[in-house]
Length: 86
Image (cartoon, rainbow, N blue to C red; front, side, top):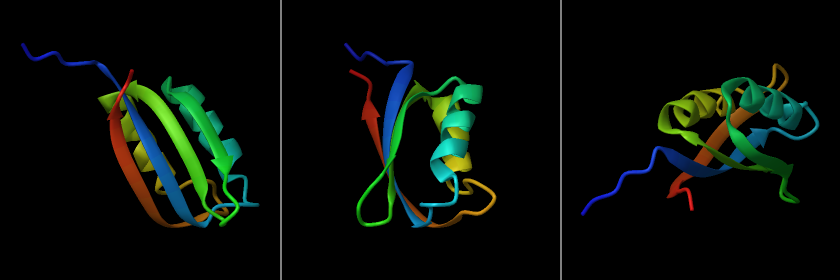
């Protein structure tokens, strides 16, 4: 029997100029507006780590935001791993 889960989770590492440019603040605001749950934090290597949970549609929209970020950010790359919510 195959079971599908409506809610999924992404774990992402965002690279570029994403620290010191309000990237985390704007990410938290966007997640709240989209109904996405999770957390965001700076890592010592200058990247930002994101763990987010929501529907596939919410997470797709959220990923589009992560690729742009705050007005002062310059996202160079994003590594995303989709995971089952559990």
